[in-house]
View 1 (cartoon, rainbow, N blue to C red):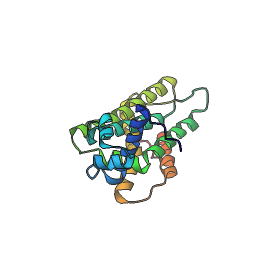
View 2 (cartoon, rainbow, N blue to C red):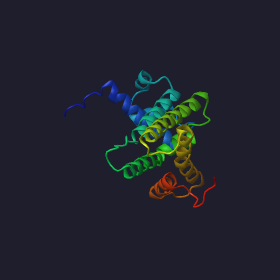
View 3 (cartoon, rainbow, N blue to C red):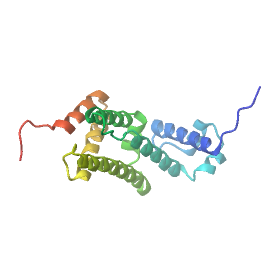
View 4 (spheres, rainbow, N blue to C red):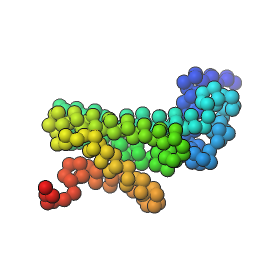
Length: 199
């Protein structure tokens, strides 16, 4: 019987991150320990500390991984093709990414209020998301497909339109269908809410 090939340092780090993500999502930050993570990963304690200084450092790395994943959900718009279906697909991608149970727990329930470093990691996540959206809106404005000249404010509004329904549904234990949220966010982005002018 042949022995399994040892993992490269990158593969081992990825294995530890995946195990930590599962543990934090199932147990929560405060009830999770390094012992749970190493048991989930099937590694020795020393192996864990070769890659991460502490539970806090691996949690920060997990949040960084989430930031990268969610940023990757938004695909640049190809202006040579119809804009509306591409924009809707981006909304769909973001909603699906944010509504994954591990993301909901880690970003909305666990990360805020752990400590100053945890709060900073969450701020970094939202800052990166806001900046990416603001850049996309500014580009859309330059192309004549977005009306706002205040992209940062609109970016925050869009983040709230996605985050709050997911957060509140999770908080109250109510089901939320991704397609319903996508429909409503898309409708708000393209047509607004009121049939009358407030101006």
